[in-house]
Image (cartoon, rainbow, N blue to C red; front, side, top):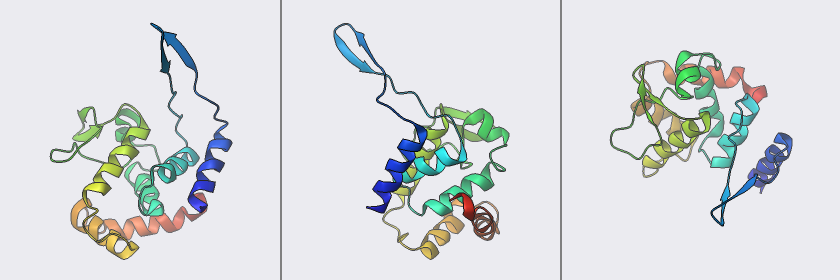
Length: 159
């Protein structure tokens, strides 16, 4: 219930209306414009997509993008430092700078969700389990989880 209310709040705060509709060859085509990036838009989209442990995912995005300033984020639309997936479904469009590229920042969140779904058979219901998964499978730095926890604490007011 709370999640639904948060999503409704996010949609209202974005001022979203019904998407514009165009007629093409007697069939209706719905054109949906992608949301411009902001920290608030990212947080709302993470919640809307049902990302597990959203506070951790948001902290990862802050860390992986250098507070949304990195070249990988600006040029690749890559929020999570994701590499191009080879054995799971992906929405990535290619690879640049040894990282996955996406058409839009929201696609990066969608790909992160696909990554999470790949590991749903692993117990990731608690934060402890999720941090363990990140430590084993996601992190390249041995202190990654410790840094994510610190970033999460520093950005608590944003989440």
